Length: 346
Ligand code: ATP
Ligand code: MG
Image (cartoon, rainbow, N blue to C red; front, side, top):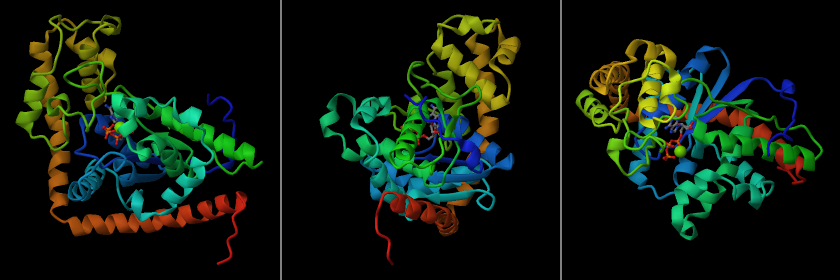
């Protein structure tokens, strides 16, 4: 679908945009698939814009008080994971109204047939799609707006978001084609590392998700050491020992998941992990994994707690980020409206 998105990105300055929904407490999947890499990208010296996408969160019901708290907590998680709000732009989406405005324009570019192919809508709407919000259906067009509003060229995401970034490329290409312009770049999804899709601890075929009804399915960034160890100990696995070669994990999704998590946390490859643990049973591997997870996550969760004690400071950081985001977004929105033929006379 996206091979026709051939906009030359050479004309655009490298810029990273990504977001996380403040739709609940963040998980190990969010950390390994997103936050950890967000901090690495910032440290590579690329301009980085990170967003708490509260307008996406409300595509399913959010209790207002919980949404406010989750937004601040997610901001704290970014900072605790190494995103520096001075070097990166960190803000919540609804403070920059251009996201919603560009989303409307792109709603009129995106095709129903494209939206109907989005697997996340099918997963989240489930059997009762008639009762899903219109926003949940339109979500990918808002995500395209988030990215294109900054002319972002790269989007670090987990595997589950690849289809939405590809849709963004299609929307950009159609806009450029329909209006005979090269205004929007074709952003690339950056999906790297051993943990691009961390799976549920209860079911190795389902992605770990903050909105899964079972808390035992995920490790939350705010879980204490005892809870993390217990969840890993109880993680569903098979009775076989770990293989020495990657091939041996092929039909063992639960085992593969735990090996991938270990690798990502330890900055090793899965093959190196098997080099160390091949032949061992889970009785040995799970405690080692729990110890590693606690060692890596405890400093993050401690720092989050510290930051959450000063919500006014978090709000100030988000406001500052929103001002800086707005400065980039406004001219791009204005130019988009102009290209589409809207009169701008004030
Ligand atoms: P929700 O269930 O509300 O959709 P989520 O856990 O999927 O929550 P998102 O806010 O949708 O989280 O995604 C934020 C980022 O985290 C995205 O880049 C997404 O690809 C990444 N991500 C989410 N879950 C995982 C996972 N299990 N493994 C790796 N990356 C993930
Ligand atoms: Mg998600």
